[in-house]
Image 1 (spheres, rainbow, N blue to C red):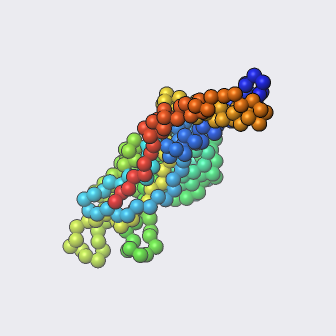
Image 2: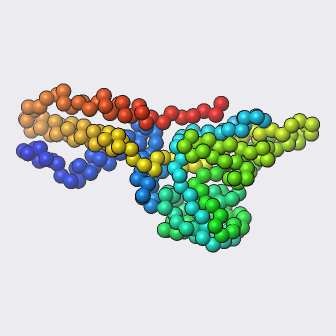
Amino acid sequence: MNIVDGTFTDTQLQEALNRAEIIINRRTDTVFVDGTGATPTYTQVTNEKHRGKGTFNRDYYTGKFPLPNVSTNLNGAVAVDDTTITVDSTDGFPSSGIIGIGSDKVSYAGKTDTTFTTCTNVNNIHLDAVAVKPYVIEISGSESGSEPTWSILTEGKEFDIDIESGRFYIYQNSLVLDAYAYNNPPKIPNRARLTYIHGTSTIPLDIEKVCLMVASNDLMKSAVRSATINGMNDFNPAMINVDEEEIERIFKRYNSMEISNV
């Protein structure tokens, strides 16, 4: 910063905007990204555990939401143990993470424009054009207190999802019979776990506004500190927090509260 004329360098301005982005993501407990980016910085949540909910209540909600509208399709068949999976496009998927393909929960360590690379846990054959999603839901019918054995559910056959609310709904045909009481009705397994990415694929105008306000507040404090050190402390203290109320109002609007399935 130039103390004489009060100007900032492009690097200082960009650093302030980067810090503001981190503050916004932390305060709202979500991620705002430009949906046109090929590799957004969505947050991966892995194996988020939930308790079984009973026979008639088959709704499960992700702890964080919304889930971004990200999907693609296989571009060619996939064989068991394939380590490279070719798709129409990997745009919108994180640089590494977990994808759901049918009843497989596949980990990948990298990606190109049209492939997921260094893949593991491809346990089934998948035909061309099958959907690939960035989330997986698993259920377990193991006895309580035992190490769970997880079954991966197939979207459209065993569950569906509302990405805005993070709601997974398990179909009736995904229920299991009680092996110890044949006359009992079907019931939901006693454990479920969810793997997904969360974040917002658009940047609302007021989020853009608050980013500039937070960055401006940051720079103003830096300028005051520098001016004070150099004996140039002729400033109006009231200006330091001039945007504080507006910043807090916007944060409250977008604050993401964790959801309980209880």
